[in-house]
Amino acid sequence: MTLTVRVISPDQTVWDAPAEEVILPSTTGQLGILTGHAPLLTALDTGVMRVRPSKNQGWIPIALMGGFAEVEADEVTILVNGAERGDKIDLEEARVAFNQAQARLNQVPAGDRQAQIQANQAFKRARARFQAAGGMV
Image 1 (tube, rainbow, N blue to C red):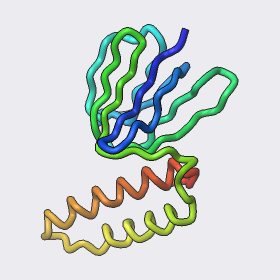
Image 2 (image 1 turned 90 degrees about the horizontal axis):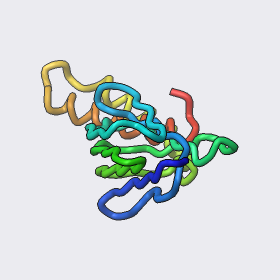
Image 3 (image 1 turned 120 degrees about the vertical axis):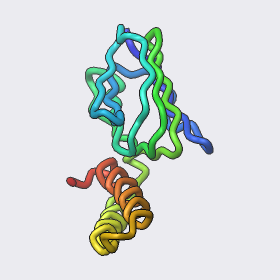
């Protein structure tokens, strides 16, 4: 028995295929989904989702840029602000973007709350892309 998994962003469907297992970056931590999972609606954080299409295949990472996931009757529907498969991300480009975002985050003045929030969000997006591309963070 498998799950039907769909990852939908505003401009494309990033994944629409069966899977044995899914690990989601929920706002409260990592969340594993297997067949027979109880119905669930959860907010997703910016991070890396991992999908295992079958027991004989490895994990496929997908960078998610926040959204929601619904689990019902072995169907996992993921609606996100943005998503990108790890195998479509250039590792070196993602590494450079991650290092730049980290440097920007470290340079934000302590009293500038809005700049801190924006830099932190940019850092989380860059980290998710870097991790999905295979970078170790």
